[in-house]
Length: 487
Image (tube, rainbow, N blue to C red):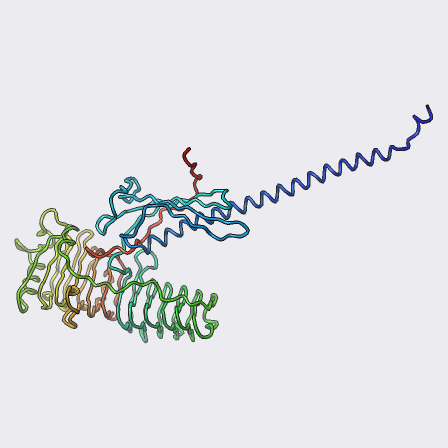
């Protein structure tokens, strides 16, 4: 018995079993750690996918607010599913509109949105979800400013547009001094131009044949041709249904072409063979005169009727006058009114007296059935944040009478920095003004820009025009704690 107890046979088996147990425990630990790491990586991927989905909800609303007319604007939440292998993701974005720009006065949802009663700001909360769980929530707050009249942009034309002089168009918020050509082609065969925005040609071609520095994108439904060594496109060149050709000059971004060969090395970015279709441009606005809509915006109406030149002469005397019963630089505007509409119901041409200074202490609109010709020297000096509308109204029951309804601002017409100007003609709008203080918009069936013209785009409301979207000033974008649904 003592000999057997001294024997060590079988000890190796016990040690081997103990080592096997230790190895098994270590292997189990490694496997569990691997599974944990895989799960953690998957969870992190889901979290990333969820936050991307939440951001997609914000992007959806940025586009929605920019392209939706006021009568279609909805206050309800939007839910979308997104493809995101190996799982699925989606977002629910909920807007909260406010009647003020600070986000302190929530919009009464029982009050409909109208052209004169619209939200001033909105908070959007977007919750992204992956595989039905792993919620992430993003929030943004946006101050809204309406886009009126069917189009936004610094220059809006409705026919072939040829720019052949030296001029500069500045943006309002960054590079948004856009040029829209609703119908017809765009070209600039000569000149030295800076456009701090985009060029959109809805139904024609775009040909850049001189020194143009475009701070945005050129996008035409037809062919886009760039052929000058000093032409510089900061973003993209796009043809919705034709080709993109860049023989000289430079495109810093990408090129999108529908037909033909890809452009060469003058395009610094990618070349995409995609048929994008025409740029997002609406129809040319037909701005008529509706007295009720102007008065709803706080304007009083001064009507000048008759035959011959008499209505235009009387209207000029009212605008330039300083006696009782005239505009008086704004002092003659009736109490409680924000401005006055000088309404000329004749087809005469409104002209200004030579070497005249007009103080614009309150808003002033000259709306005529004829033309406007500011050829003599005149200075229009705003006091405060005043606007001037020079409008030859679109006839309510007939076609425009051209050139009777031309609007012409000569190079002796000056505006100071405290006044904003809206110019509209259903015929030709000619801008020869070379004063760098010009701020506003120019809309005409044909738009002619003179040499050394310098303008800054400022969107201006035209009472009664439809709100077709909102410009957006984003205060912040941030992630917030995902809201807990009510029990």
